[in-house]
Amino acid sequence: MKIVRTPFLMLLLLASISCQPKNKSGKQEVAQKESDPHLETKLISGQLQKYETAYFASGCFWCVEAIFESVKGVKEVYSGYSGGSEKNPTYEQVSYGRTQHAEAVEVYYDPEVISFTQLVQVFFGSHDPTTLNRQGPDKGAQYRSIAFYKNDKEKKIIQSYIDKLETENIYGNRPIVTEVEPFEKFYKAEEYHQDYEKRNPNNSYIRNVSIPRLNRFKKNFESYLKEDAH
Image (cartoon, rainbow, N blue to C red):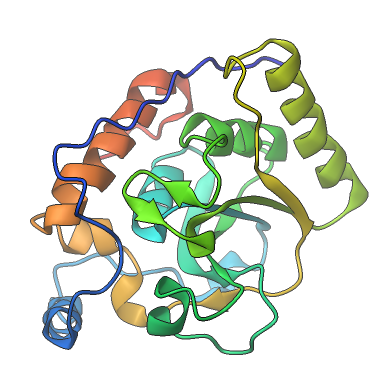
């Protein structure tokens, strides 16, 4: 199994920017943008049934969704919540740490084009798995690193990759704190969060955090990218 070496240092000019909501008016503005007929729409569930799914959490889902959507073989990605016991959580509840859930993504992929092992490589190569309850400017357990598995085979793949990363001392003396958890339930986030990075390119968080993070990933994983990755 090849390990992709990706030194991942969050160098942020505006540390105060975060994925947490600032006010209700911002949400209303996003909701209005969703109605733009020129924007791409998500595939409907019936179109996705033939594909496999994978679930990951690695910080603000606006960033994570954009990263996985740039990967070849990935057919669709949804932002949402997972890892907690509360039913039907809302963005406000999760983003302010009022649940045990983390912001997560649901990845639909074609296993004939990309494997679960490669998705695990994408996951570890696109965030810092050594920062406990934090990713960049986003702090709290809701932004923790989690790799979910649906069966023993996936669990073994995740754990084996972690072992290799640690054996090869990829992160120096910093231990990997990623949780390896059985997948139980994914709650899809509110509609205005879907394709957030595409729909809101001028948002300050998107400009200063999401896009630089996406570009770092694309630079290190060129062979994994779709031809039309933006």
